[in-house]
Image 1 (tube, rainbow, N blue to C red):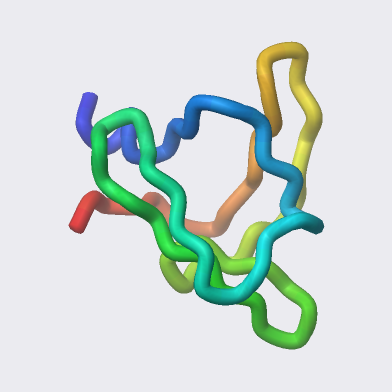
Image 2 (cartoon, helix red, strand yellow; image 1 turned 45 degrees about the vertical axis):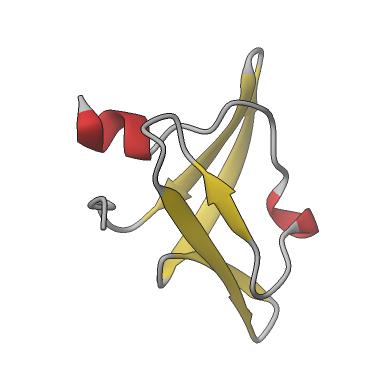
Length: 69
């Protein structure tokens, strides 16, 4: 449950609005860090590969499983 909640944010965030140095609190209370390198957004060092709009928010496809710090 903790890992799933670490992948969930309450709200809808578009990847094109991310900027280097941002952080967001996840459902489990822990934060993820956003970086931008060469115009590509990363969450905790993992690149956001795609963003899919959904009826209840946005799904960001990443290449790794994020583990709470």
